[in-house]
Length: 279
Image 1: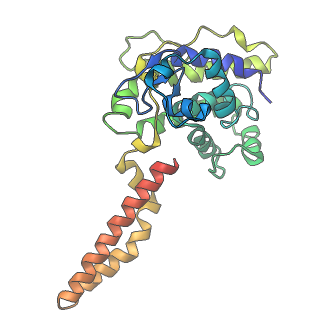
Image 2 (image 1 turned 90 degrees about the vertical axis):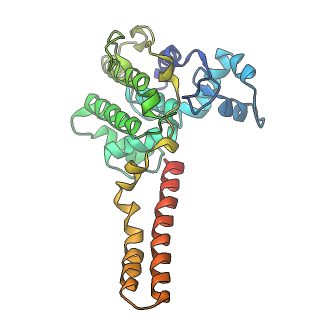
């Protein structure tokens, strides 16, 4: 539907994904054009690549990887112009499945990580129209980024760069305001609506190096996860059983109570793992 957006999206992407980076705050490790070493290895069909091989990756190979492994998986060929770019940028930064699930969350449809007919229909009928959807989607992206509370690779370490990348505004007011993903997405949507080319957008966004760091669901804070009702409900019955056992007499009752409480915490821990792995 919006394949013509891809060349413009790539130009915008390489503005803040173009350089080679290998910093401790980036969970992705050695990265160039936003392509991590693991993604490059998978594209080449090998088990691993060196940091030097990442550094020597060409722009043409990066484009091929984006076209095959990010654009369509983020809904680029189905979503309308502007929203396709916002989802694509989110997908590169946080992996396509996460980007699509967060879009589906905003739309209020099943969060399966795949853009299909139901998602497309919800986009077309979104209250307030496409521009409002883009703004709401980018706000949801920022909520997601702020939930990544790992001190070394999450929002505490990379939040300023991520904020500039998405919103175009520097929390410290040291960088000049710019469109950001949200502004450029809205401009692309407007250009498509008026049948104008999207390649008249400003030069690619400038942002600190941490804007390129991968925003990984594995960095979601425990507090954010246990706020979900489903994190606690499975263990409530077991906990009540254990507590009620304490009212009995003897070591057996106490052992039952201790085991019940242990099962509750084990269940919560495995739920946290599942959330972090599934996005």
